Length: 149
Image (cartoon, rainbow, N blue to C red):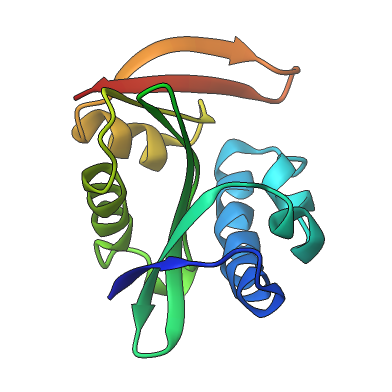
C-alpha cells in the first residue's frame, strides 16, 4: 500500500532514514563515491526538508519512499528509495507512478548519479529525457532528467 507519510513525525523520519541509508549505500557503491549528500542526512535534516513523502508499506513495514517538491506545475523528485532487501519487486515503479498521478503538473524533474546505471535506465524506461550532465567533482557527476506530461 502507498500512502502519504508525515515526515515531520520523528518516528516516521527515523523509518525513512532506516531505508534511505542502505538504499544510498548501494548507489554509492555503484558510482564509486561515498560522499553523496543523502548519506549525511539525519532524522533532524529529514524533519526540516519540506518535501512531500509517499511511502510503500508491506503490512506495517516501510519498504520504499518517494519525496518531491512541487512548484509552478513542476514536480521535482528529491528521493526515490527502496530498501535493498526489497529491490526488484517493482516498488520504485509503483512509487513513481503514484506520485506522478497525484499531482496536476506539466513536468517532472529528477537527477541521479551519472554512473548509477540502474537509476539512469529506470528513468529512461519511464519516458524521462536527459537534459544535462553536471560534474560535481572528479568522482561525481549528476545526470538530470525531465518528463513532460
